[in-house]
Image 1 (cartoon, rainbow, N blue to C red):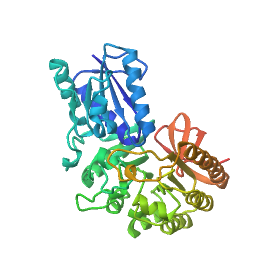
Image 2: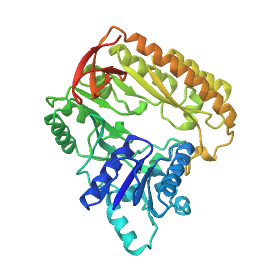
Image 3: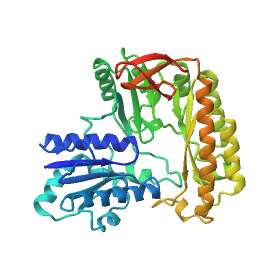
Image 4: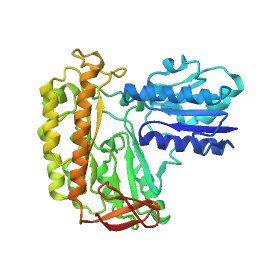
Length: 410
């Protein structure tokens, strides 16, 4: 039996897909090498961070069923966790498996194929207190390994559905992380990426912290770059700030989601910081490590966002040394406080604001690239002819995949 796994959304989902593929291989199933191959079972690992993500997930479901009307379509991931009955109501969907049940998806599929009975396997994600089955917790983007060291989020920003989809914080033990990184070093990899739903919450559940983990990881020989995934601005402690700005092994590339440059909107979002705090953090990092790339996320059209709120965001981003930004129009998400707020912004206004900020994003990316021309930078070789600099600039070049080399940006 051939199984095709289709992934949408964040890298946590890509990790989970690798874990599911491993589970299926152990049971003797054949994994289709690409999404285009005809399969007997399609497992669609969905995203629900925005309404557009929901739409893309549904489109993937429809495509799979069109490709093989006789195939079993299994839907899992965040959309499945948050809206299982909605998905179960689609005629194209045979089985719905929540994030809480992904680790035993092989057994669930076999039970379904044998009995064709129960259709929805979704448990309360908040009952999970540990990470399940971390015998495989590395996902490779080309020759760059990602280690998923943390899952879940204990913050409930008013617009965000992710805590309801991923649950509360659960962390991999420091010993397991160290063992994983040492193994990667022994295999010749020189950059690793620490990943999680909310990386700065690593260790909250097991009495440690991201800072303490990094102190130990920095001692591992053979690893030249440790890259961190997205961090919450209010959770970057003084200790963590000192480590990421003073240790050369930490890649000078940090994704710090701003979401809005208006203090009024930030308060409505319950982000836990003000514009001044965010600006100070960015300026501290860049002052200590001038080559640093700071990336950010922005939501436009949050309920009651005015023209002035939007232009406050624009002016802040224009002034700050931001290297790139991801811009999203606000959309109501299930269970969130913001979905019940008044003052919804029209789609036309949101589209126009997205367009304006995306144009600014192009300018910021160009400015950052030009600022680095002539500099010698470290870069990991992703694949033949394709490199990624320590400060997140994609370039062409030569080298052995997985190794870190030095380049001069032209």
